[in-house]
Amino acid sequence: MKRTFAALALMAGLGSSTAASALPGFYAGQGSEKRLVRSTQIVVAQKGGASVITVMPDYEGPLTPFALVLAVPGDVVLDRVKSLKREYVDRLDQMTAPRFHEFWEMDPCEPGPAEQIWEQTFKASGDTDFLGGPKIGDDSKKVAKELFIPVDADFKEGEYALTLLADAEARDVAGFLGKKGLTAPAGANDAVRPYLDAGMKLLVAEVDTKRIELAGGNVAILSPLRYWSEREQSSLPLKLGLLSTEGKQELLIYTLHPDSRMEAKNYENVFAPTNIAVDFVVKERMGELYAGLHDISLAKNPKAILNEYAWSSEGCGKPCPNAPILPHELISLGGDVFEQSVPEAERNPVPDELSEEEKKAHEAKLKELTGKERREYEKSFEEERKEVARKRALIARNKYVISRLHHRYDASNLPHDIELRTAGAVSGGGGTPKGATREVSTAVAEGSKNELQTRFNHFHPWKGMMQCETPERNRWGKPPKTYRGLRKIWIATDLSRKNRAQIEPAKVVFTPVPALGLTGVVPDADAGADAGAAAAEPKKSACGCRVVGAAGTSSAFGLLLGLGLAALGLRRRRARLPAQG
Image 1 (spheres, rainbow, N blue to C red):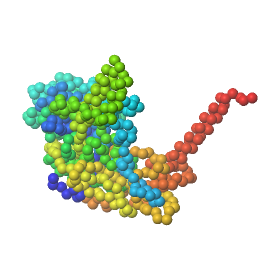
Image 2 (image 1 turned 90 degrees about the vertical axis):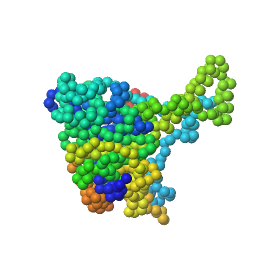
Image 3 (image 1 turned 45 degrees about the vertical axis):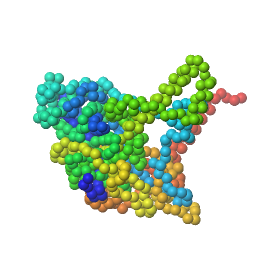
Image 4 (image 1 turned 30 degrees about the horizontal axis):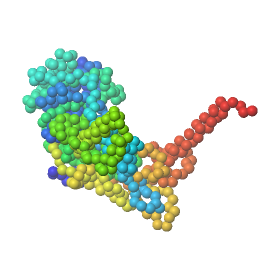
């Protein structure tokens, strides 16, 4: 890998956000009205030489009959094409998106190191009786958690009518669509020819416009279409998407690989600046900030592919915008295909031997039962053990490195289709700030494991009392217990519809980013201080108003409102009570 991590990461830096991906196809519809794609999200899952591709585009145009035409690998048949729920791709988007994180200065008089929100654990343990085995002896014990974890692929049907075109039909795709009353974009036949010559096919998905989800106005989000190939697909036919676009398209590619993150093979790869300090005002406007930063980056390096995230599917970053992706989500995005090649002995392993304690408990339980009741217990006991073993093995096999690549393009900066390859592990965007200067590494570097995230930081200094002899300052961690603000991780999403000039990065980015021409604004000493002060030491407010996201004041208003409603309720209740004589 040829890249100067620090310089390049900063230079082509910040582009990405959420909704995204170039469409590996085009739209055709009734009449001459334009049907456009602004963004698409693509999931590429690879394992054992097979590839599973999931495409979820948006759609802008009239809600009259239309079709989505995709170029797919030559070995795809209709049985290998499925429609998924949007939530599976949305979850990947949310989990990998650039995030806004707040660090709070710990009470200088409170002993011990600062705690971080990602240090909390919600995993089941022996303390919660999730002991990893079936219920034995004591009915108060909970059964193995694996029995409650969904692991089956979940598909959605009905939104598309699918047709795979024969080669002759595909080479005159405009004529084929015309027979269905649909008009292909100008130049469609010429655009598909190189892909057909390379052995690909065309998949026509006619859309049921009554079943698509509107996103406002004449914009809709289609359900993801998933297809798979026995071959490793490293090239995505993204230039076809230029047939259905005006201006720029957002391209967001998520990759799932059992061992490695993935990057572009035939374009320059750069890393978004991370651990950059920013103004509190961007907290709920991350999409607008990120869109503006991406445009600066594209002006300097228009063909660069941004690498924004790389992490094991068992985690989700520091902090996590949502929970790690679940087993059934991974199965739906391709794991079920990979399972087809797993030997039967691995798919249904022999359960582990019972421990001596479990054996004694099991035998004691059997002595309590007779006849049919005993036979049913023994049967269910063995079935549960086998199911636990099966699910454990399935979950263990379906762990992946999740990567996120982002590009924003038109014909000028996408001269050829993007090809993918595996790449070495990288880390960046983690760590905790140190000292009064809030020092935290902004570097992206090669590492032993993938822990890369794009994180923007804001700091709340301590504003409360320090009633101790030796206060310890500048320990940065999670919000204090008195914080009453919304505990949510704000992320950059839906870039294709954001106002890209709404926020000026030069006015809100505190950390210098020389490669982007950002010198770094000196933060106001009181920036974000309202939230920090209220959380550290709740104070009475003259007006009860607050900045959005600030702590303390919202709870004061809520308390007053609650007391008022309670008083009103009490008054009404008294009015209904009979007079006491």
